[in-house]
Amino acid sequence: MLVHLSRNADGLRNLLLSARTGEPLRMYPSPGAREADISAGVTRPAEVVLADAVEASRRFLVEVHSFPESCWPNEVAFTSGGPNPPLVSVERIVELRLTEVEIHHVDLDLVYSFADVPVLLAGRLLVDFVERYDRKGAHFALELDDSPGGVGWVKSGDLPVVRGSLAAALAWLTGRSSEGMRCTSGGPLPDLPPFG
Image (cartoon, rainbow, N blue to C red; front, top):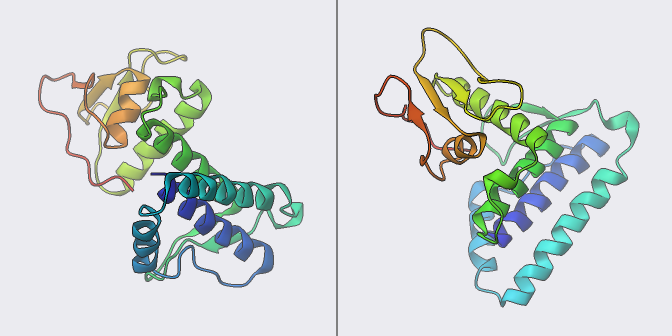
Protein backbone atom coordinates (compact mmCIF):
# COMPACT_ATOMS: atom_id res chain seq x y z
CA MET A 1 0.00 0.00 0.00
CA LEU A 2 2.79 2.44 0.89
CA VAL A 3 4.56 1.70 -2.39
CA HIS A 4 1.33 2.44 -4.25
CA LEU A 5 1.03 5.76 -2.38
CA SER A 6 4.64 6.62 -3.21
CA ARG A 7 4.23 6.03 -6.93
CA ASN A 8 0.94 7.93 -6.91
CA ALA A 9 2.71 10.93 -5.35
CA ASP A 10 5.41 10.79 -8.02
CA GLY A 11 2.88 10.37 -10.83
CA LEU A 12 0.73 13.28 -9.72
CA ARG A 13 3.85 15.38 -9.22
CA ASN A 14 4.67 14.69 -12.88
CA LEU A 15 1.30 16.19 -13.81
CA LEU A 16 2.02 19.25 -11.67
CA LEU A 17 5.37 19.64 -13.43
CA SER A 18 3.56 19.41 -16.76
CA ALA A 19 1.09 22.11 -15.68
CA ARG A 20 3.96 24.33 -14.51
CA THR A 21 6.18 23.94 -17.58
CA GLY A 22 3.71 23.28 -20.38
CA GLU A 23 5.70 20.17 -21.33
CA PRO A 24 3.53 17.06 -21.92
CA LEU A 25 4.43 14.63 -19.13
CA ARG A 26 2.63 11.40 -18.39
CA MET A 27 1.62 10.47 -14.89
CA TYR A 28 3.53 7.19 -15.35
CA PRO A 29 5.68 6.15 -18.32
CA SER A 30 3.05 3.47 -18.99
CA PRO A 31 0.50 1.40 -17.04
CA GLY A 32 2.96 -1.51 -17.20
CA ALA A 33 5.80 0.59 -15.80
CA ARG A 34 3.58 1.67 -12.90
CA GLU A 35 2.74 -1.94 -12.04
CA ALA A 36 6.39 -3.00 -12.36
CA ASP A 37 7.52 -0.18 -10.04
CA ILE A 38 4.92 -1.17 -7.44
CA SER A 39 5.80 -4.87 -7.69
CA ALA A 40 9.51 -4.15 -7.32
CA GLY A 41 8.90 -1.79 -4.43
CA VAL A 42 7.06 -4.26 -2.23
CA THR A 43 10.08 -6.57 -2.09
CA ARG A 44 12.21 -3.93 -0.37
CA PRO A 45 12.79 -3.81 3.39
CA ALA A 46 10.02 -2.09 5.38
CA GLU A 47 12.19 0.85 6.43
CA VAL A 48 13.09 1.53 2.78
CA VAL A 49 9.43 1.40 1.74
CA LEU A 50 8.49 3.80 4.55
CA ALA A 51 11.33 6.22 3.73
CA ASP A 52 10.28 6.15 0.05
CA ALA A 53 6.66 6.97 0.99
CA VAL A 54 7.75 9.89 3.16
CA GLU A 55 10.12 11.26 0.53
CA ALA A 56 7.67 10.88 -2.40
CA SER A 57 4.98 12.63 -0.38
CA ARG A 58 7.43 15.39 0.54
CA ARG A 59 8.34 15.93 -3.13
CA PHE A 60 4.66 16.24 -4.04
CA LEU A 61 4.00 18.72 -1.21
CA VAL A 62 7.04 20.81 -2.13
CA GLU A 63 5.77 21.04 -5.70
CA VAL A 64 2.27 22.06 -4.53
CA HIS A 65 3.58 24.70 -2.10
CA SER A 66 5.94 26.21 -4.65
CA PHE A 67 3.47 26.03 -7.53
CA PRO A 68 3.19 29.43 -9.27
CA GLU A 69 -0.15 31.11 -8.70
CA SER A 70 -0.34 32.02 -12.38
CA CYS A 71 -0.29 28.31 -13.33
CA TRP A 72 -3.20 27.17 -11.11
CA PRO A 73 -5.78 27.61 -13.92
CA ASN A 74 -3.72 25.32 -16.21
CA GLU A 75 -5.01 21.92 -17.27
CA VAL A 76 -3.04 18.83 -18.22
CA ALA A 77 -3.81 15.49 -19.86
CA PHE A 78 -4.49 12.87 -17.20
CA THR A 79 -2.67 10.05 -18.94
CA SER A 80 -0.23 7.19 -18.74
CA GLY A 81 -0.38 6.87 -22.50
CA GLY A 82 -3.99 5.85 -23.12
CA PRO A 83 -5.99 7.38 -25.97
CA ASN A 84 -8.13 10.49 -25.47
CA PRO A 85 -7.11 11.30 -21.89
CA PRO A 86 -9.31 13.77 -20.02
CA LEU A 87 -7.95 17.17 -19.08
CA VAL A 88 -7.67 17.83 -15.36
CA SER A 89 -7.02 21.04 -13.49
CA VAL A 90 -4.18 21.57 -11.05
CA GLU A 91 -6.76 21.78 -8.28
CA ARG A 92 -8.09 18.37 -9.35
CA ILE A 93 -4.58 16.90 -9.19
CA VAL A 94 -4.35 17.98 -5.55
CA GLU A 95 -7.82 16.56 -4.85
CA LEU A 96 -6.82 13.25 -6.43
CA ARG A 97 -3.83 13.01 -4.11
CA LEU A 98 -5.94 13.75 -1.06
CA THR A 99 -8.46 11.10 -2.14
CA GLU A 100 -5.70 8.54 -2.63
CA VAL A 101 -4.18 9.24 0.78
CA GLU A 102 -7.53 9.09 2.60
CA ILE A 103 -8.63 5.81 1.02
CA HIS A 104 -5.31 4.07 1.56
CA HIS A 105 -4.98 5.46 5.07
CA VAL A 106 -8.08 3.38 5.82
CA ASP A 107 -6.63 0.41 3.88
CA LEU A 108 -3.52 0.41 6.09
CA ASP A 109 -5.79 -0.69 8.98
CA LEU A 110 -3.93 1.46 11.51
CA VAL A 111 -6.85 2.52 13.73
CA TYR A 112 -8.19 4.86 11.04
CA SER A 113 -11.50 4.23 9.33
CA PHE A 114 -13.89 6.05 7.05
CA ALA A 115 -15.61 7.28 10.22
CA ASP A 116 -12.42 9.26 10.97
CA VAL A 117 -12.41 11.16 7.66
CA PRO A 118 -13.20 14.84 8.42
CA VAL A 119 -16.86 15.53 7.59
CA LEU A 120 -16.24 18.24 4.98
CA LEU A 121 -13.70 16.08 3.18
CA ALA A 122 -15.96 13.03 3.45
CA GLY A 123 -18.77 15.02 1.82
CA ARG A 124 -16.53 16.07 -1.06
CA LEU A 125 -15.32 12.51 -1.54
CA LEU A 126 -18.88 11.21 -1.49
CA VAL A 127 -20.03 13.60 -4.20
CA ASP A 128 -16.95 12.82 -6.29
CA PHE A 129 -17.50 9.05 -6.04
CA VAL A 130 -21.23 9.25 -6.85
CA GLU A 131 -20.49 11.43 -9.89
CA ARG A 132 -17.73 9.03 -10.99
CA TYR A 133 -20.16 6.09 -10.92
CA ASP A 134 -22.86 8.12 -12.64
CA ARG A 135 -20.47 8.74 -15.55
CA LYS A 136 -19.87 4.96 -15.69
CA GLY A 137 -23.60 4.25 -15.91
CA ALA A 138 -24.27 3.23 -12.29
CA HIS A 139 -27.23 5.40 -11.27
CA PHE A 140 -28.72 5.40 -7.79
CA ALA A 141 -29.97 7.79 -5.15
CA LEU A 142 -27.93 7.94 -1.97
CA GLU A 143 -29.33 8.89 1.41
CA LEU A 144 -27.36 9.20 4.62
CA ASP A 145 -28.54 8.36 8.11
CA ASP A 146 -26.13 10.86 9.62
CA SER A 147 -25.82 13.62 7.04
CA PRO A 148 -24.83 16.88 8.76
CA GLY A 149 -27.18 18.83 6.48
CA GLY A 150 -30.12 16.45 6.74
CA VAL A 151 -30.77 13.14 5.04
CA GLY A 152 -29.72 12.75 1.44
CA TRP A 153 -26.89 13.66 -0.89
CA VAL A 154 -28.13 12.45 -4.25
CA LYS A 155 -31.85 11.97 -4.82
CA SER A 156 -34.13 10.99 -7.64
CA GLY A 157 -37.57 9.43 -7.61
CA ASP A 158 -36.69 7.16 -10.54
CA LEU A 159 -33.57 5.54 -9.07
CA PRO A 160 -33.02 2.86 -6.44
CA VAL A 161 -32.38 4.48 -3.07
CA VAL A 162 -29.33 3.27 -1.17
CA ARG A 163 -29.04 4.24 2.47
CA GLY A 164 -26.48 4.06 5.27
CA SER A 165 -24.12 6.17 7.33
CA LEU A 166 -21.57 8.47 5.74
CA ALA A 167 -18.72 6.13 6.73
CA ALA A 168 -20.56 3.06 5.40
CA ALA A 169 -21.34 4.89 2.15
CA LEU A 170 -17.67 5.76 1.65
CA ALA A 171 -16.67 2.15 2.29
CA TRP A 172 -19.27 0.90 -0.21
CA LEU A 173 -18.47 3.49 -2.88
CA THR A 174 -14.73 2.68 -2.70
CA GLY A 175 -15.38 -1.05 -2.99
CA ARG A 176 -14.16 -1.83 0.53
CA SER A 177 -17.36 -3.06 2.19
CA SER A 178 -21.12 -3.00 1.78
CA GLU A 179 -21.73 -3.52 5.50
CA GLY A 180 -24.28 -1.07 6.85
CA MET A 181 -25.67 -0.18 3.42
CA ARG A 182 -29.15 -1.17 2.29
CA CYS A 183 -31.49 -0.60 -0.60
CA THR A 184 -34.65 0.94 0.85
CA SER A 185 -36.83 -1.06 -1.54
CA GLY A 186 -35.56 -4.22 0.12
CA GLY A 187 -33.77 -5.35 -3.02
CA PRO A 188 -30.03 -5.91 -3.45
CA LEU A 189 -27.57 -3.05 -3.59
CA PRO A 190 -26.84 -1.83 -7.13
CA ASP A 191 -23.80 -3.38 -8.77
CA LEU A 192 -20.96 -0.88 -8.96
CA PRO A 193 -18.33 -0.95 -11.70
CA PRO A 194 -14.71 -1.26 -10.54
CA PHE A 195 -13.61 1.73 -8.49
CA GLY A 196 -10.94 3.84 -10.11
